[in-house]
Amino acid sequence: MPEVPLPDPAARRVRALVVDDSALMRRLLTDVLGSSGLIEVVGVARNGREAVAQVAKLKPDVVTLDVEMPEVSGLDALPAILAVREVPVVMVSALTQEGADVTLKALELGAVDFHSKPTRNQLAELRAEGDLLVTKIVDAAHGRVFRPRKLTSRASAESPPRPRFPAPADNVACVAIGISTGGPQALARIIPLLRPPSPPIVIVQHMPAQFTGVFAQRLDRTSELEVKEAADGDLVMPNRVLIAPGGRHLTLTGRSTRVRASLSSPDAPSVSGHRPSVDVLFQSVARVYEGGALGVIMTGMGRDGVDGCRAILEAGGLTLGQDEATSVVYGMNKAAFLEGAVKHQFSLDDLPEILQELATPRSVGRESGGL
Image (tube, rainbow, N blue to C red):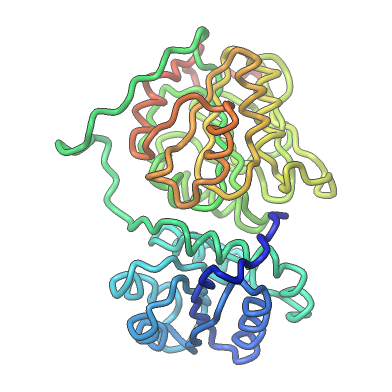
């Protein structure tokens, strides 16, 4: 779990607005956030209508927004909140398939992160997850808000020319992506722009188990590539995108022309603070594909993926990192860049063209993985 920094008495606390229709949840969230010493809850709201008014009045640094509320729901309120003030919004939602779908929609609309709402013992669960929630709120307050825009495969005339990257020694046989905070928005912008032929793409997105399947389905509906939540034994093959299921490590096994996905037990220990871990996936990609591996580390807090990027470089592969300007949280990718595990950085909207240019598949047939 990410470490929460000790409060600096001289630093201004993050000013948060808590929005939830439950008086109990408003009180619990206020207590947990306020007790951290890093956050001051400057106001509360019972529904989306009140939230919009409070954002305009209080000008908070960050908003926690319940998904399901009477009168005006969190999903309906989100665009109105962002129209009043481009404030980072962290969604608070139930761990259900319906809750996952709505939350992912909110992330596509501009929310920067989400946190799971307690299910049974609300006070105990919130306290147990308190450090993680506080870290998300603080990171969100210092992150960036990216408004949704229409997808396009062409850069605008005003776009600066993108940097050129050295071609890998081998054809790129597999693209591995590691991503966390800000990932759903970023992947929703990138994956629909990828076109066949494409090498296999494997992704770790830090996300609860109840969310990854829904997320894969949403991406699959908008993509020309096949996108699915990885299952044990799935073929890793061209024109297919596999997303690691929440709560289980994803590794690749086999040889580069006959590779399958392998999932850990849900009880496997976390690595680099996460399960699934970017490091675990990247290290397996380096072992299987060696110089044909391309590792892409993107927006997210922490340093998961640094060791995996280093493993890909040592195997002769190529690593790329998302730049600070287009990251919601410049954390994982920053650590990889500063520690030398990533040599080249890219702007988010340049990534589809970069992958198209670098990732020439060894075989383009959808059935080439064999049985």
